[in-house]
Image (cartoon, rainbow, N blue to C red):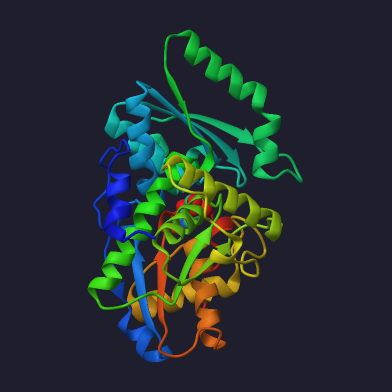
Length: 352
Ligand SMILES: *Cc1c(COP(=O)(O)O)cnc(C)c1O
């Protein structure tokens, strides 16, 4: 087992481009702690920088942009929904590094060109090259990307033929290089807790492509600490297959660091009861907790990711699944730009 410092030293040998402001704060949520009799902290990954609209993707992008620059790339291509946080944050990182951002965005919610919202508006301000892909009925985002593969390949071939060197980044920035960011976050958080004389009993994080969770699992495998690490699904993936996928990602990350592949299924849990009705479809109960967090602590979460993750954590606390006096950390992954997106994504946050 390694100390957090040893893990950070191991990571310091990897190419990395400074983008955000780290370490992110670890903030006690005093009022909710007093109300619920747990010691609740928020790890403020929403506060990462590099813009006001940062979030968990910036940590991944520090390693990814380091890699892209080391490889001499001058274009970054990535994928997501039209309101993807990852795509927008990738475009900011690409601009800061002088690379051209090219985004393939699946219109889960059809954008209105005359009334661009939230991340899609930011992508436009950033001048990212946008390719909006129409989603056919019944398709998942991956299905749409698969069907559009010839169109995507044609754009990539065109770029390469004109002499550009392309860094092709999968959705979520979920590659072994990107996941190093969350090994880093795990070591950083462990140090912050130690400075407070604490160990976490529970960590809650929203999980989409699984890269953030996989990086945290790799960190936990290296450091050997024992919080109950709970990933809250934000989309309807088959849980056991998804868990295997995350485990494989986690071990790929360890291998990339030259470490033994010691990630195991017992190092994390997945909660699949909180994404309903679906990805980018708001949950009225999660929206209740978005309002609760705002009205208790003055903090914003979003209806797609962090609000559902926060709601899942609160339900665990309310139902006594988290025992009193436990130290609980909510990893706040960001995403609040979604509050300014299309009504289909936001749902009703005005009621009550
Ligand atoms: C992308 C994202 C997540 C999920 O991260 P993955 O690494 O894709 O699992 C969680 N919260 C927010 C706000 C995100 O943008």
